[in-house]
Image 1 (spheres, helix red, strand yellow):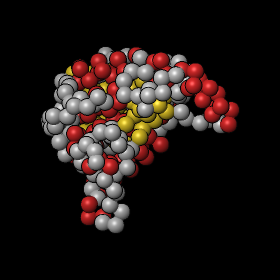
Image 2 (cartoon, one colour):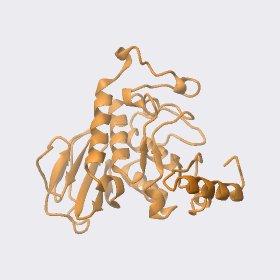
Image 3 (cartoon, one colour):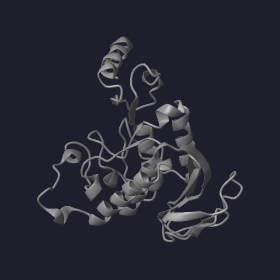
Image 4 (tube, one colour):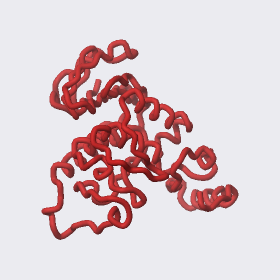
Length: 268
């Protein structure tokens, strides 16, 4: 946005796409960007709307007081979170939402774990949410081993390659599993998105693609939750859990049990 010239970016796109039609053009814009996402300039932007909503919901209990142009701390309940996610999606055509660069942290913000008060459960929930949502997930280097730091220059600290004592292997394994989940289920990458439930600290949605239905239910609360989704549309009679305490077992959409600070993902 610091090159305020539509004609320049339109010509830039034409030249880049002539060389490589599959090239991905992502703009560093911190706010809603419909002007640049009309199909004639960028393919996507850094989706800080996603960043802020995600950190503020999953980190609501432990947020630090953090305010920058791109991210402001403000605890959200599930209803408020759903409103922000819906508003984010409403800015663009769905082709754009499917390729937005979803991120939790970057070189221009404090690290996500630090913003969420160094609560690993908040960061793991946020990462799983990123891996199950429409968009292109982005992991800022070092976040995958639990690096935590405030703003510049601390958020750009060197990766501790030579000292694995600084690596949080629990977070690392979680991110590997969440990434694997996204790779194993195409619906989580390119499927449709429908919000199903947002109440208290529970948020649920579904992704659908080529006859596969994926149900995703998050519980950001500190107590187990049971939620009924049977009134949320034409759901399958049952799903097979691929994430959560009951992994591999039957998930009944009429009564989904979600452990505290965890999620259930079922495929039907």
